Image 1 (cartoon, rainbow, N blue to C red):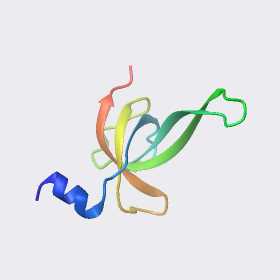
Image 2: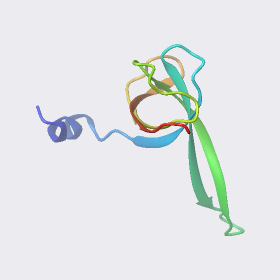
Image 3: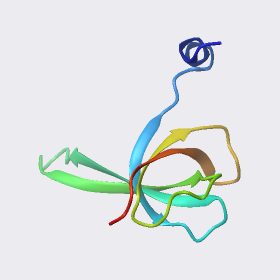
Image 4: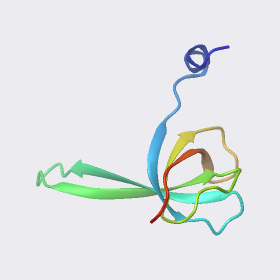
Length: 91
């Protein structure tokens, strides 16, 4: 079955890109997703961020790396994302 047919069957999965802020756990990394939103009253651009836990089976992501994560089934109480690739290594 092709990827397009699979995506239509179960719905499109969310994909996010963020920076790894912690890799202290086994096979889990904490990824900070940054976003810029306009304040509804003051119209100023405000930076916001959220931290998501992602499954990293190969333990290839480390602190400071930029990674792409994709939504997946619940893997634990707080883990609902999976690391797809390391976009850029930390310098």
